[in-house]
Image (cartoon, rainbow, N blue to C red; front, side, top):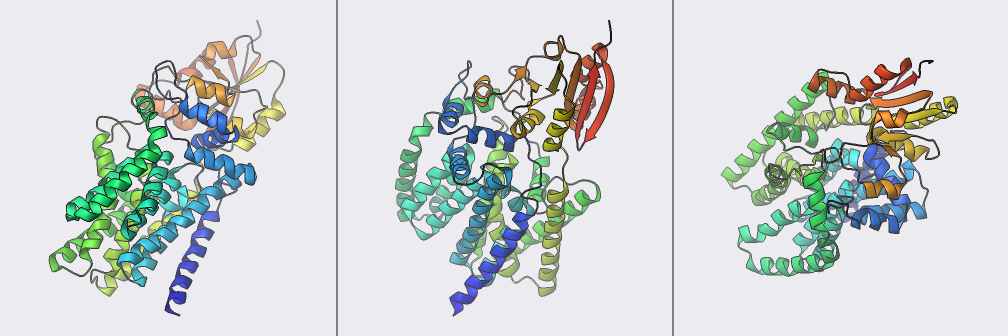
Length: 497
């Protein structure tokens, strides 16, 4: 009877998690990365392998991510519908599985209340909700790492080896979670567990070895053609926002979210200190989860000072452990009832702010691409060209209507934004042009699509007009400008001779 009551609590939490993850699943716009996932997955296994195994002229990989997620998405789309909601449903299922794993991991060390609170945090905090909808591999990275941690706790070494290998096949940054996990027996001087984990690690490496030989080319891709910059100390404040209200936030929402996050985490850290000082029962387990929540981001930040790999989305597995640590700090550290209640209010207020922003936000890098394609189709005339300022708007527009003749201006070769390789352009059947002059030669009208964010960023950095827009202004005549979310649709006509 007790177990039935316990599972009823988990069932209700899963219902809440499902409802939150269904909000906007069919209506929220997609962005470049999601369009890439859809496009490469729908091409099938051969294209996925070509896109991830091929190397370009500089011996770097065409794609910097391993192929497992793309294979899963391809198989899912074969079984179900090839659409945005269907593709997001795959991530949604993985997100629900993460909530279940959070519950069972916490239940191994703490009581039913703590496990339920941890699962509730994983169900409602926006970082988890967001990536349980996104058509990318990050929620699966969290899933496999959480499964590896549960296997480690229960000493299920075959399961540990398989889940660790699956994590590596999902994202190359999985090692930043597996290495801190592997060090725990060493810190605890638990030599028996260390030996077993070492053997399991060798088994995981063996499973991963077919892809391991591709790792140098993928790391070369990251080093030579990756948009990430070395992170500064401000990332530690960003981490607090990610873990509680999530981003993007602006104005008063940002101020409120940051204030809530700092206060919540400060109290949790203080309670952790008190638990250590008082040697409370299970305090070591609380430290264990704090270690797994914060050491991987710190490790990523440190390594990124030399090789920039600090991808905030890849911190999702750390957030899973954060949910458990926060639940422990609230329920197992003798926190006064009044402060505990206030903490719950602040946590769920943070969640409400973040989910509201997640559902309503449609700025950069999102856009109304279905409406954009429809509008262009209705007004396109013979002699027109449609040019996107970059791949960021082109790929989603291309996904929704590949028959529409549109191109994008390729990134400057070797620049930090040059992430879409010639091999991938060929595999996906994309249309790229070298510059605006080539793209507009001999045309009567030019439809030009660019993000307002891109123009503002260029102007802020240089004090000048965006060069593509400047070229069009100097050589053609502006006929109209339309706002479509953060996108700007320009129509230029060629002056009569």
